[in-house]
Length: 124
Image (tube, rainbow, N blue to C red; front, side, top):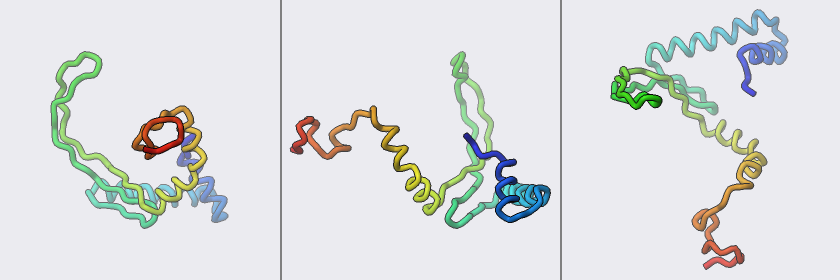
């Protein structure tokens, strides 16, 4: 379940003992400043969290997936987020149990196990 803007405001209000109106103002000022920087083509870097930048894409000819007809896709600029090392490590550390559950049904190949593919437990 995603964390919403109103939930962020609620958490900020509770943790800093701020009235919700002031917490909402703080969240809005942060987001507005970030959006403004990206609109100007500036890069946002938050140490330990990650960075945001705008990437430009050239126009190209795509295809309508439903009809297969060619479609001209215009040039565009899109925001891109690159996760920081500290955040990546914290997320990976907190999902260790989830990874094991997600891969229970997955068949592991030879190069992932380092073995010869036999189920006898012997490598080589």
